[in-house]
Image (cartoon, rainbow, N blue to C red; front, side):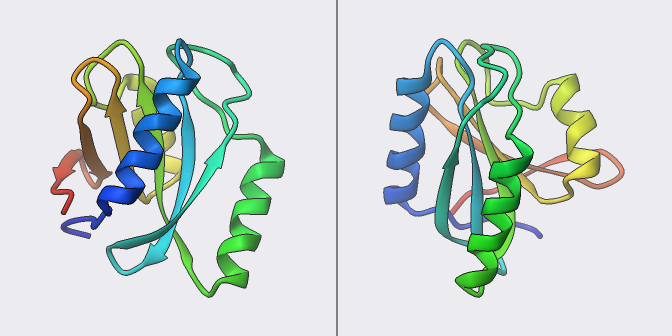
Length: 128
C-alpha cells in the first residue's frame, strides 16, 4: 500500500475522539477497501495509558465481525500520541509486526495525522 485515503470527516471524528480521551492514548480500527478508509470503529484503550494502547480481544473480534458484515476489510489501526509526535514508538513497531496494516497516528501536540507501514523498515506513506 503506497497511500491511504482518510476523509476530512473521519479525521475530525478521530481527532475529537483523541482530544476527549486525553491524557490517555485513543485507538480505533479502520475499515475499507484498497486504500480508502470508509468506516471508523472507535475502540477503548483498556490500558488507560498516556503512552500505550491495547484494544480488547472482544472489541477486535467485534471489529472484524462488523467489517465482514459490511463487506469491508480491516485496512488500518489508528491511535493517538497525546504528548508526542505522530511517529511509531518502539512498542508500536513491535505490534506493527503482528498487525501488518497501515498504522495512522495522531499527535496531540502537533494536531496532525501521519501514516506508516512496516516492510523491512518503517515507511511513512501519504494520507490523502
